[in-house]
Length: 524
Image (cartoon, rainbow, N blue to C red; front, top):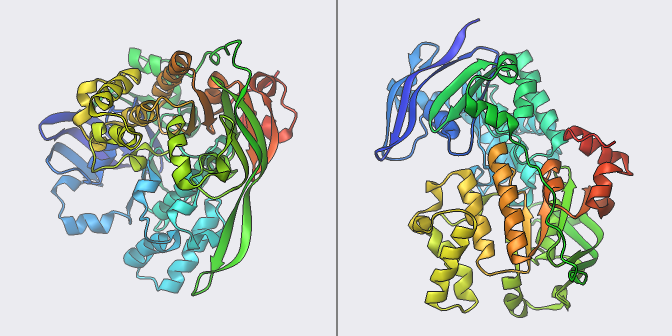
């Protein structure tokens, strides 16, 4: 078994801060190595070091041997030839990695033209094939990244990485935005490509069930160090390090916050809520047809309660969240605190937004890189007329609420881990003391142990402040730990809805049962 890539005594510092400490492990050709650990353990920085995509002020020591060639000694021209060709990467946050100004088809075909010398037409044909392979309709090549769901954007990133059939694919959380059924499909696809092309895969993930099913070797990282490296069966059956054992035991658990007896009136009622998107084509981008993304949604939510929304990628979960917060055009009624928000102008709607907040799926994309954390949290407070002293108090309390040190408020988003950024996004929503928070996949990019922490955090905050939640997720175990009610969506249609405990134990629809089984939840 030949070694394709080897890390020897790899250490990394960024502006004097130690990030990685003397890493030693190797990737065997045609095999899958999983890199696991909590958020901030150095997994993504290890991947960035291999491709030499490091921030300014980074100092690297040791060796990164690519078939015997030290990548740390390569010229930039040599690296450009390797990146996207023999070495490819799927990034964790597709909305940040994709260019918002170009259609996804152009972004995929660009690498094909550069590395293979193909014509535009040949590259376009290859792009259509790749879209089909990752489960996307070929007509989506005309869409911009913001017009796709989180799962669709992730699949575009996978298609882009596989465009030139690389020898080594570094997949940084490639399934975080995908539902449980698509996770299996995507990793089955990568496994098929591995078999056919001899692909070597470095899989960075927090999902240990996927690690167990798809990996040959596991490297466990903690605080920038490799604490354990073993064959997958050996590690899961006989983990040696206490940290590894704690990771294997971590899983969201517990029950939703008990409802207060007085919380019987509806805080939110949706009546026949539906969303349609225009399909445009041609030089003048005229509307050719319309696609219904959401059909006649009805639900009632009481104060202090949580409504879980589940379904496959593209089922309309995020569209529902954006529609009820009036961030996209929709039809129907959104009755919030007795007021129909659909009848209000944008100016009249503004005072209501302090009571209705949203936590977006991609915290890095939703937090401005130009503003400090204090400035990000202060924006909404300033808009709604709070004084400077009130803003300072609310910012400090919001950071304490999400278990972050208020002294960190002068740092910028890029200085935090994924889990910390998600806490900041929750703090921004909390700062205005809303009645309802819509959370769109708030734990999808987090490892299991941090997911468990965030679930417990949300439960504590809901009990303290009695806000209601619309909790959108493809992770049914997380939804079960938080939700009082459940809505199952498929292709914009309601499959079933009702009491969460009833639906988890006695699902009526075959689609719901399929989702539960794919998530490892077997109803009795």
